[in-house]
Length: 212
Image (cartoon, rainbow, N blue to C red; front, side, top):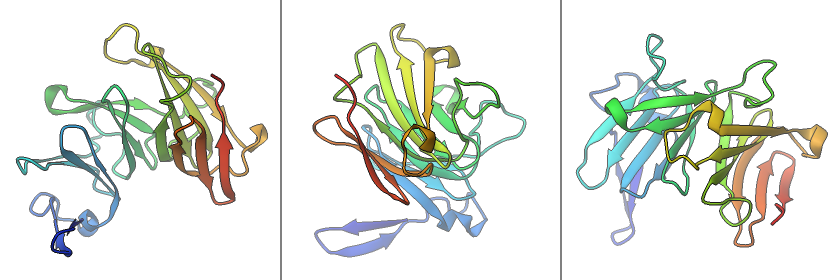
């Protein structure tokens, strides 16, 4: 993990898990994300998730624990996203999607692929996450787009009760090459100022224009 000082043009190395994680996998950073509370979230390949408070310097880290159903679902963290409700979503490579809950020192609600369940994710390997903020979203609904190695998932979250999200509050619709995608591996997602959603694949970019 490196920090670039634009004033001095110098790079500084930050090994925030030094003394916490012995494995050299702490050097394999897959993704970083800064939230609205001045926290830097760091996803690692093999050693889970960490959060650095850029104000205080405090570091917390989370790993998958087999005996704890509320732990991080997988230790390969490939993407992190904060939605318009300030919720933190963590995409893993093998454990599906996690929603972070601050209570009890941090726990995670899991969304994953379930064979035969049409309201589950199309894959547990999550590459990218973005939100429809311009179109389709309302105060009562959040619309997330989640890219996987086996298609695209549109996730509509019911926010109407202002309570903790459960699986019953979430509707998932999956799209693959059968629905017009050029490739099932969705590497990146972004929404433009007009509300169009752009998807990056190994076979080019796709533009989707949601209905008003």
